Image (cartoon, rainbow, N blue to C red; front, side, top):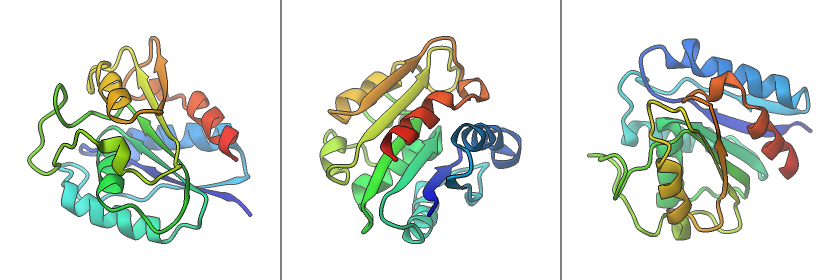
Length: 183
């Protein structure tokens, strides 16, 4: 049986087909045929809404088996981690991976939709490892946001990738290695 992975895109006009599809292609190539990488188009990608995306995420996650892996890029990662903290899924997750996710809260980005919590890590599904990947040359989500997540999610496994941009230079080799280590 193939290992299920749900990849949540970032926001912005054309992101699904013009930007994050390259990340998914890299992940699929690195992982090989033993993985079922699902890549749904999120609603109104040009103007992501926490409420709307959270509902779409809940529907996508409901279709996964125990042991699935969730990966969120950029604002997709921000929405994913906050939605999981607000309403943990019924399934046992093998891991959660955030790629270049902006942090919402003190020191990070403001949000009218996401209520920041100082206890983000404590509200996540227990015994689910969280992996953080962020490029030092990210000009969208500041590199320092990975430090904010590291403080908010004690025990998170952090990968600071030197010389990599917001799209990790369209190379998810390190993410794929993390996924393989769980399976």
